[in-house]
Length: 492
Image (tube, rainbow, N blue to C red):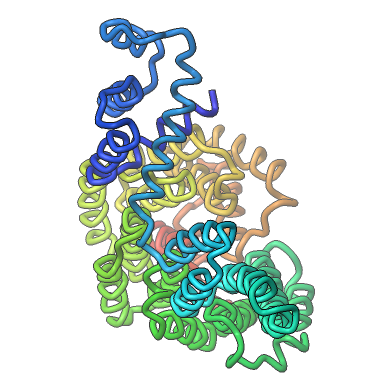
């Protein structure tokens, strides 16, 4: 049942201090008495699952009713959320403002307009620090009501004029946000549609009046960030990664300049920094490790959303390190790093999403392939192809299919290579645009697999290596470096 799954996930996500607060909070609202909801909470917390039969047995021991356990679990969910709301009241500016809004509403309904005004003014000062326009509008709405009832309609009209200012800012911010989302979708379409069409679409965004005439002074922090990211996406499409990096670092600097925004929106900072690291990892630049260290230190300033942020920093930084080593052909060091990462993953109970699992398995498979440990390589590729679905990470999933063909080729499973090659074309020919190196490598493998006894594999790989070296404007992704190194191994 959905509510049971939600309650289980909620309890499992709670830290020790949150669990302790839940029990203190519950005792307060129940005058210190033990209650079956605490008992149910403890059972779920102890066993890490919801078992209604087990819960019923324990409730019987304490002579509690077991008529509707599903209802009890639903009510427990509500109690936990109330306790967490109470615990985290002052953790962010938005939460402080929302808490004050409740008090403002109560004071208003009691007709205590002076007290209401004082709290509104105090809350406006707090709210201005993180520029949450929707919350400021809600505050102004209560200020308008108070002004109208205590000072007359003229006072309410004056406040209402300020509402118009915030609405204009909100609309301006919305336009830039919408253009950013569109630019991001276009960026991710690179390789999936014609370059001419993509460039035309991204230039249309850059030529939009909201971007061309952007004025940052009256814009929120997030809108200023989106503006920089629009240009970062633009230069990514143009494959001008130096310019992309400049705008990404400008976006990160905007986040850095506002301590409140950085602490309260850590995932924004992380997503920008991941893109910065992604550019540095495709080089032999030692700055890469400085950036990795800066990235990892970010968690030290966090309180709220710390655990989620730690997970993302852990995954992204280790994936980036592996890619950096693969890109620079440091395969032995990548293998050592891989083993250390496996140990860390076993000791950390991170909630890793399928999206990241697919990437990690692909990296592990590639490293084993380049170390000529083909059975191990196949083990990780099979995890991707058997345990996950293409829609969970399409490009990497398809690249896993390519590695699958290559591994079976090295294992001399030629009939299976031909079968997988045919299946690959049927499934992905229209869906996925092969890179230059992917296309030519698969063709060589297909030709050798058709006539393995009469074809000189080494000569074919030598020819392929020469062809690739003559390719102009050849831009290598990490996945292409893997194939490049594989071709080199088979040509020498």
